[in-house]
Image 1 (cartoon, rainbow, N blue to C red):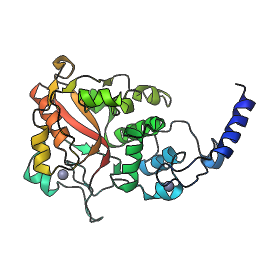
Image 2: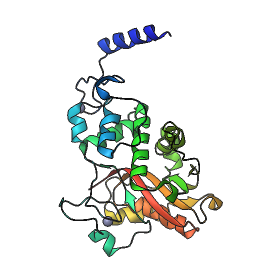
Image 3: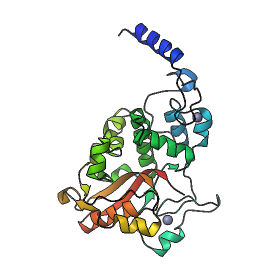
Image 4: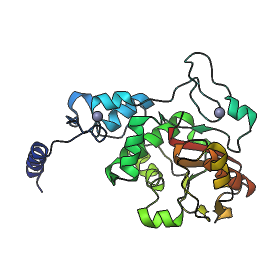
Length: 276
Ligand SMILES: [Zn+2]
Ligand SMILES: [Zn+2]
């Protein structure tokens, strides 16, 4: 299609089907490239708040974007839980002091509240696959923000169970990390030393979904639910585990235990959202 036909198609399409906010369904006026200072080009130098505004401008109304809550200090230096009091410095939360985690640190860009929950649901369950790109960029921005890129060797998604993988057709977390090197390459950031792996860990038991279970039940449900497939890929490696939502941390902690048991140097965790 020529440029002009494409533009015409877009105008007609938007007049007949004006874009709606994915969360509240109100009509939105998505920013056009280069207008109002908006750029669709990758920019990993933005802080998380500005990145969130840029990435979701095409999908959410301004009210919903403003409702998204960025995780900010003071937070738990281990599990990344943002503290209710907005004063003071990062320190270990009560839970992380009482029971040491297997992973070193866990971080997430956004709080798992109503609006972001709906965004993640749109991506995971409602087939809004177009969200893969903004969510991938959000994860990569957070990786850049919380880690030195040379402090991680291997990036591993938390695996789905095979049954659920078959039903859904894809591991939605892997889709958010597999293009990191390409995205970074667009801003001349070299992540080529980073190994992005899909099948290092698998689920070997059909675990009940963690949703609706208490802390104890979650830990019991997840115990021994994973199996390491390829030890060679993780021995002496510094691992970044990636998941969609950090709830109690039981799942990622169990994955971390397994990876450390098989010789990983250390395990960190990055998720899209942090339940509080
Ligand atoms: Zn909205
Ligand atoms: Zn903590």
